[in-house]
Length: 155
Image (cartoon, rainbow, N blue to C red):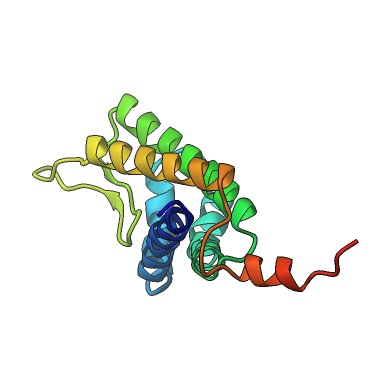
């Protein structure tokens, strides 16, 4: 069973990245609006990050699902999760009322809408733990990395 756990972790983490990236890629204006809502970055940086983040998430998801550069993908995922957690905790601490924009839309919430900060923090913390575990134990079943390692000349 242990050799299958990295595959499950890759599929979960990669699937989340693909879902999040695809949801944002279909509406880049909403993605930029979501990044701006955090009020952490200058306008130009928020625009670039909001427009580029969906494509980064899709690329990261594809790497993980395919099992290419698994340790790198897991470490990059962990770093992004830390950044996202800092953003969410910061928004909550500053009293901002925003939708995280993690899976599309995002931005300022209307007066009657409630935030989901606790759920978002728990979700991103769980994904951070999965990413860290995968970085520690990246070798598993059905990974392109395994095929590359098997084909590499032995010294």
